[in-house]
Length: 175
Image (tube, rainbow, N blue to C red; front, top):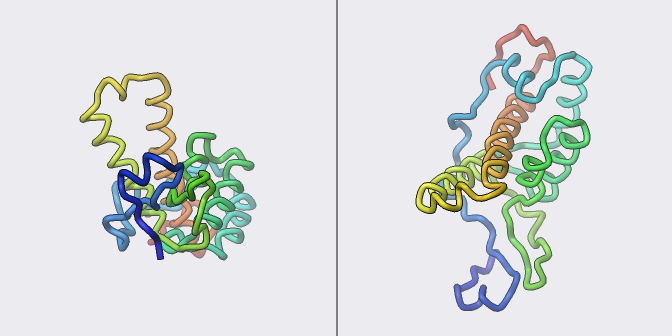
């Protein structure tokens, strides 16, 4: 069970609450992928062996019910294979963002829906940048935003591959 901190408590600590997902049942959004070729293109995969290896790796994970620990393992695999950028990797390793008073991640075993998490974090960031346009123009803001978009693309491609039966890029399957 997560303990939510008040604003006063947060002023005196590095602790952060986990991101509160508004729509935890969300499995489709503007980044949803329904074609094998699009999923492969998103992750820059172009041969059956790579796809097969990724699908075998993903058998242990459900992107709609995944913990921060598991998301880190998936992100590391993608980053080490050069399938995602450093900025996108940041989204994966942060998970739901829960930290203790010293700034150390907590409750990293708690499952959440990464599809909804990534999408809602992006939407919140876009809304924040719209409200604070000077921050949207600051150094690194566009890179951060692009990393979030790329992470959304990647997590949806992973969801497609995790649910797909074939490694043939010409077959159109439903996720």
